[in-house]
Image (cartoon, rainbow, N blue to C red; front, side, top):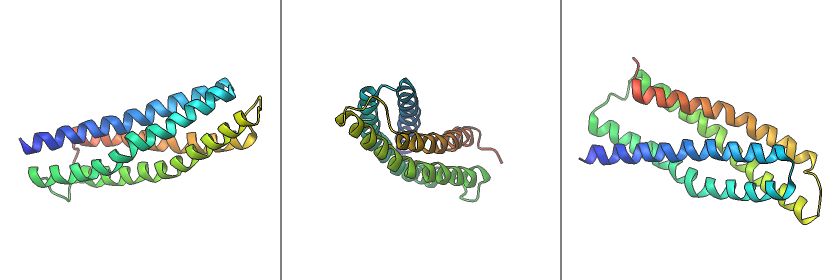
Length: 155
């Protein structure tokens, strides 16, 4: 029963981590493309909030519950699938950390544009958004590969 509870927490946590990431990316990207300064500022504020509320806790819950499942189920720490899952998780989190900083910048830039009554987002917004989107791509594919590793556990 203990294993099933931890596994449930691990799956729920990964769902929040991946789902919040995909949802945030979708809304931030597509609201930015509308070039509506006010809408972009609102969505950017909520994307940053969602990251703090949902993504940040799961970044810590995932390795803890994963390690606990390994111990309970007696999976060998030398498993190839585990090695690659950890590497891919490090890549994804390595991309996420600067994305958090970029999201906060995007929020500040768009809020400042609204406060100044600007009709357009400044060039700095678009530069930061390109980096934000560029870092999201490898993180997305790293998580997709991790899901495969967790399910298939290839040798």
